[in-house]
Amino acid sequence: MGKIIAIANQKGGVGKTTTTINLSAALAKLNTKVLVVDCDPQGNTTSGLGIKSKIKDDENYTSYDLMTTDASVEDCIQYTEYDFNPQLEVIPSSVNLSAAEAELNNIDGRNFILRNKLQGIKDQYDYILIDCPPSLTVLTINALTAADSVIVPIQCEFYALEGLTQLMQTINLTRLRLNSTLKVEGILFTMYDSRTNLSQDVVSNVKEGINENIFNAIIPRNVKLAEAPSYGKPICIYDAKSSGAVAYNELAMEILKNDKIVSKKKDVKKSTSSKPAGKTRTGVKSVGASGKRAARKNTLIEKSKERNKSKENN
Ligand SMILES: Nc1ncnc2c1ncn2[C@@H]1O[C@H](COP(=O)(O)OP(=O)(O)O)[C@@H](O)[C@H]1O
Ligand SMILES: [Mg+2]
Image (cartoon, rainbow, N blue to C red; front, top):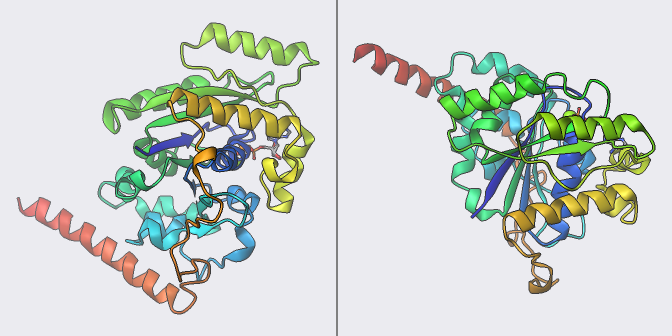
């Protein structure tokens, strides 16, 4: 099957990246095959999954190359190094992704780039999770256009609902114009503090005011979740017994249950590796990648120009 889930909310600091890192790891720990696409130029998902130190922007393909050149998904994939089977895979991001928006401005069909790239490999995975930047610009629109569903993290604080209406409008517009089958996988409450009335009020306000799926799993405020990324580890490895790890495991189980996928844990033999034999992805393109990158970008721009020309001629 293969399901693409975007983690989106244009508000910053609500737990999109923390959710992408820890949900992807929790799903991988349950032996599902997961690919993470980091579409935020800040690259916090990339570093939180221990990939940042392994790549160099000018030598390895990143989500920037995926979006602006004809680099394939396979070209961009990096493998994490945790004890998961199959191993969790990541398309890292880099700071130059912030320039992608301007570069894509004149490209035909710019909202469909990610969808077209992911379509061909989608069925090789159980889940593809896309971490979105804190904006509703072309990168987020690409993620929503590519996705089957969207997870909306909401921080349990006073301004929680700020911007939610706008996000729902964007989701509805995306459904109308770009992706009619886009679903809301669920609203996810994050940084919940059971000791405060405020957290409880936010949860009941959202439940009353929004007619969308809401996850039963609630992510508590947990300092371990904030610490783990600096060690390049997801919470299920950094501190598997922490309340944060338990909550993200519950979220993963809830998603699998909704999709009627039973944990594949018992079916998988430890010895089977998911890496293609004889091929190390990291650093594989260390020679001449930037030259190739430039060539590929030119190809993409040329193709777009040709399309425009033939449109003008018709
Ligand atoms: N449940 C949580 N408990 C404690 N800290 C959290 C939690 N979720 C996120 N954080 C911290 O809050 C900050 C913002 O989270 P992040 O996931 O980066 O948000 P976003 O990607 O939406 O901008 C980060 O410093 C992160 O470590
Ligand atoms: Mg983020």
